[in-house]
Every structure is written in structure tokens, then in C-alpha cells.
Amino acid sequence: MHQNILYKTAAVLFGGIGGESAGLIRSQVEYGGKVYRFKLLCSIDSDPVACKNHDLITGEKTAVVMDLFRRWQYVAWHGHEPPEDWREVTPWDMWVAFGYQVPFFLFTSPPCKGLSGLLPNEKAASNKYQALNYLTVSGLELAFQACDEYGGSLPAIIQLENVPRINTRGKPLLKQIRKLLEKYGYVVSMRADHNLGEIGGLGQNRVRFLILARHEAQIPNFVYYPEKKPLRTIGDVIGPLPAPGDTEAGGPLHRLPKLQWKTWMRLALIPAGGDWRDLNKVDYENLRVIHEPRRGAYEVADWNDSSRAVTSTAGPGRSNGVTAVSDPRLQIGSDGKTNLLRVQPADCPAVCVTGATCVSDPKLQERASRHPAAYRIVSADEAAPCVTGTRLGSGAIAVADPRVNTKLHPDSYGVQDWNESAKTVRSANRIMQAAGSISDPRIADRPGRYTDKFRMQAAGEPAGTVTGVTDVQSGAQLVADPSIKSAPRADTLGVQNWEKTAKTVIGSMDVHAGAAAVADPRIIPSDNEAGVWMIIAQDGTWHRPLTTYELAMLQSFPTHLPDGRPFQLEGCSDAKAREYIGNAVPRNAAEQMGNVILTAAAQAEAGEFFTLSWDPVWVAPEEKQQPALIH
Image 1: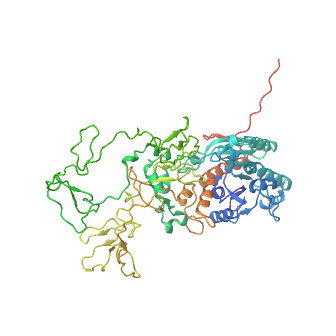
Image 2: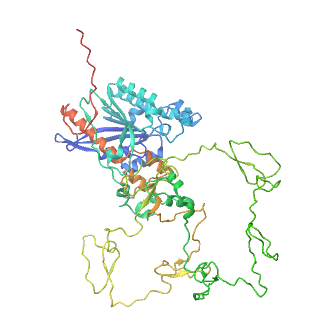
Image 3: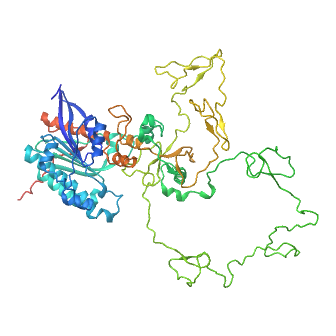
């Protein structure tokens, strides 16, 4: 108890970068004149980088680097014996990490790679991933041994979070966990239909498997389910954030990934809410992304009309002059050679034999003994033609092989709708594997958001409304003063020619002070060229990848760290940062689940073992079957 605040201790196993921890720290309920909060004892994880970022995000030094693998698990996972200085964690090590006390609440989120549907069945069944999956059991066993042997009691409430596929791929593990929990006197709820998006009021659907176990001796009352909140749209979450690519305001994780040009094209062709499967419906033959030249390029002038102006760049293919004409004078010259380069139909009489020696011959596929199978593709279910010594261009040596099993995941190249809730943020959230893109409508000025931003008022017009946040970025705070006569410098807004030597680079070089722009002829990149481009999709929005920073916001991480910097992770690549973020428990969902656990603890302390509530019961006392009466 501290200043009327009663703290309940909590410990986290496999805590990662601290989504659960950050939520528990925010949990708070008032009951019976007291304020109940959590005190985090530790967050255990084997990854030192994750532990470093855990403390960076939570602002507390509670992360503990500890490998919970047993030796056989280590060998199966890594494929070799551990180093000489490695040893198995003992119950005493766990007890030290707990701060020599039994936590009131124990949360565990063991690795889910081997249980995820993203992993093929063969790999999931391998010894390597079975060893990883067993952490669901071995982590709990170590915690129980530590609390029972050295503390003489057990955590009052235990929660386990994992992917829904654990219900099928991890069925034997769940049987062991249930048996273990019931052995120690817990009432257990196991369900795979918990939407953490609704629990935390997130902007994404995030359906997970949760175990909630209540120790009946310590918590004899109900634990109620958190109130379900309406899901937000993805636009609600990322709309107020800095523009993508603004790493000064959004931090280094707000970079837009550089994608190949053909990938940007695919994203632009997928409708909002769709994925790669919609590419099969695209009428690609009638769609082109091209540079739109000025009127006049390749224009053919009408013989009976006046010609357009003759310009200095007039030539076929150029963009500002007509340099071709539809000439009706078929008799070229005085000798009347009307058949010059003419192709005759096969079913018409030939013209006079002069220089017209071409014919459209329909017998292209009936050339006896002249490689009738040239470039032919043989069907897999028909007999092959004769094997000759020829090559692909003159014999049927290609086959339509049906044995291609490559399938993209659902949501590959998925483009999410700005007005819908986001799909689950996964640790492999890349555009090639998940719906990791969004149709961003914020291309032009957003209505209702500072319409006077950077506006300059005329000297003779009334001033705009003075607001409490008036500055040049949010209100019309500039005035065009007619008494000041100034002219821009030479080269201001200057556009330099690509084929000319550049002008002098000055110390204040930007487009407002010098010739800092160039007429770049590289309009359309090659298919495999990587970069960041804006292609306006058919719905008028920019279909772009979500930045790592935006994925963290969908997981309800804070926009800024306790030290004031924009949210970021240190010591890891952008791909690894996405994995950490996708594996995390959303902070807001953890906070709401922590609130109902604190409420149950407060009611148990007050002796209120039964209360009426509109909320459904999460873990109720089990009904014991009554013996049948014998007459």
C-alpha cells in the first residue's frame, strides 16, 4: 500500500518488447475506497535486444534475459549443443527473477511460430518446432516449481496468450497445461475466439487464443470478461500520425519501404479491401501506366486541315509538334507504282507482276516437313511428339507442367480500406505475405484540418478568426504587405535541363532560393527497380505499404517513448522490428484485461464472492455434478 494505492505484483514470461507489460502498468481500478494497480516484477525473454527495447518502452528496468529452453529443446531448435557457459534455468533462477516473491498475476506468451498457420504442416511437425512449442508447458512448470518450493504459494491468476491454431496443432500441449493447472487447484477457461481488437478498442481485428486460470482458494469469485469496444478503422488510427516517410516527426520506423516498381504497380491495381487474388480480375490489356505527353506526340495531321505550328523540336514521337501527315497521293512519283510495300490478300487476284511480291499466306501451320511443332507446348496428359535433335524454336520440347504448388498466402499484396479496421498485425507483416498496405486518401489537403494553413491574407481583406493555436502552420498568420517591394532572386524555382551542366550550388540551395529542380526524363522505372513512388489507384487513393511505425500504432504502442522520442526500437533491423511488433500483445488490450483481473482481486479481498454484472463471466466456479438419487 502506498498513498492509498494497493499494488498487485505481476510477472511476464516471454515478454518480448513489452506490449503486455506496458498495458499492465497502465491498468488501474478503484474499489472499496482503494486504487488497485500492478507492480511489474519482471519480464523474462531470451532475446537481449527485445529486453533492451522492453525497458525502453515501459520506462522501467524490469526485463530479465533468461533462456527457458531445456537442453534437449536447445539442441533440437539450434541443431547443435549449447556453448560451455550455457546452463538450464533452475527454479531458483526463476525465483530470483521474481524478486523472491510469488507474483499475484503470471502472464505467459510463449513463441507461436510452430503453432501458426503460416508455417507448413511438415515444418510444424518437425522436432525443431515441437521443441519450441513445448515452452508453453516448460515455462509454466518452472514458474510453479519456483513459487511452490520457495514461496509456499502460487499465483492467484494465470493467463496464457497464443495463436488460435494452437487448438489443433497444440492439442496435446493444451491437455498437459490443463492437467497441470487443475493439479494445482485452478479453474481454467480455454478459448480461441478472443478478439483483442474488441477488448482494447483497436483499429485491427486480432483474434487470439487465451487461457485464463483462477486459483479458487485465492479468488473464489467470478472474473468477468472485459467490456467489448467497437473497432476503430485503420484510418482512425493512422490518420493523425505524421505523413509516411516523415522520419523527423515519426522516427526512423516511419520510413516507407523501397519496393520494386512492379510491386507498386500490383498494389495500385488491387482494390481497397482486396489482395493478390484480385489481380486475376484486372483487365490489364486495357490498363497502362505511362507518361502522358503533351498533345502532338505522334499526331498525324489531316491533309485537308491547316498544320499546327512548326516548333523547334518537331519530330515523330516528340511532344509538341505535328510531323506526320495522311498523304492521299497513292501514285508515288510519275511512274505510278501504286503497289509499293503492299500486302495482297490470298483470296484475291494478283495485281500486275511488278514489285509487289508479298502475299498474306494462310498456310502457316501446314508446311509439310518444316518443323510443324515449332514453339509448341505439349500438354502433360498427351503423348510427346518425336524427339529430334532440334531446339526449342523448331520442335515441341516444352511441356505445360501442372505440378506447381506455389500458393500465396491470403491477403498477399492486400490493400486495406482506410475506413475499415485493420487486419491482424503479424510478425511477418510484409506486403508479399499479409495485408500490409493501405489505400491512403490523404493525397490532397484534408478537409477540416486547418484550411488556412500557411495561408497569406491580402492586405485589403478581413483577417481570419484568431484561435488558440494560431501560427503559420495552423492559421492565416501572414499578410501580403503592399508596402514591401521585393523580387525573388534569379533562378528561384529554376528548373535545370537534364543535358546541361548544373548551376552553382549555393549554401541556401532549395527550390525557393536557387535552381534546385531538374527536368528528370526518367519517367517510368524498370520493373525491378526499387524505390518509393506514388501511383494513384483507380479509386483515387495512394495504395502504399504500411510503415513499421504505423504497424506499432495499430498494436496500440505509444506514439512516443518515455524519453520523448517518437516510438522506435533500437539494435535491430526494420524486418526484425516488424517481427517484434507483430508478436506483441496490444498494449490497450492488455490494459483492459488487467483491469478485470484487478477488479476480481479487489472483490476477493473485500469478501464479495458474488456480484451482479452485465458483463459475461470469463472464469466462473465450476459446477460440480450432483450424484443421482437412488430410490
